[in-house]
Image (cartoon, rainbow, N blue to C red; front, side):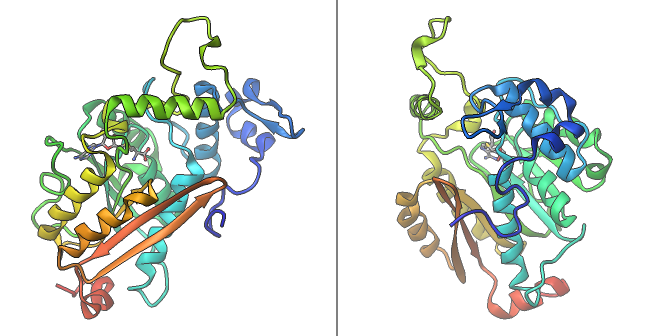
Length: 315
Ligand code: SAH
């Protein structure tokens, strides 16, 4: 299995094209072992500029900066999740993907990069509310939105003051969303996050301790702050809490979804969903080369309510 068929970031990156839109990327591009142009994926600056170039070329985002040390999201993987959500929504819309700004998503943990709203708007014209517990992430996302005309009127950012809540404080009383989307912090402790990053660094073929600075912690090429990387109890605890709280929003949000990084965590999530009165539950597999991941999705709407959802008369 590879990327979603609608994913526009398959195969090799077209670096000459990307450099046209983002000349700053040029000094970081060189022929790789396979002979084709590439970048050093262990260099955070190169990865950041690749993202800038992709966002500019594919989504007309001309201004995109994230603070140093924050998660730099790989665009192809994030796009797959958005396409999976589009497929899910099409099930309640006569198998047509609903497009345009009336389709509303709630991005729980929007991050400093504002990545899901950018892709969701760029691919399908959807509107978003993005939330985060990290004020600096919110400020950075706000800056991205305010500096890009295609985002300004359809993306709103809200601070979540309580780490243990996802919908409360985020969803306004009369509001409805067609879906929620979330990339949870997946490590269960700071130590685990550091070990994970070290493994990743090794996989990229670097000699960990060969750097001049005598650091025991590898540089995070994709970055990451504490709240981005870990949560007590890891992704299971995070998603379980989200499932429990979603019961109170059962008629306000059609599809609740979350990324789940580990397959071994599926039974725990399945059992949490079974304890609710969810009417449907789906696991959507995703694969990007070696890396396998999945989206879990659940809804409380009955088949009739689902059918009527996009006529906005379901509840
Ligand atoms: N969506 C971005 C960032 C994911 S990292 C991306 O895919 O790259 C996870 C994010 O969730 C972090 O920004 C973290 O601060 C935020 N977060 C953690 N707990 C949260 C909560 N209860 N509500 C909203 N955001 C939360």
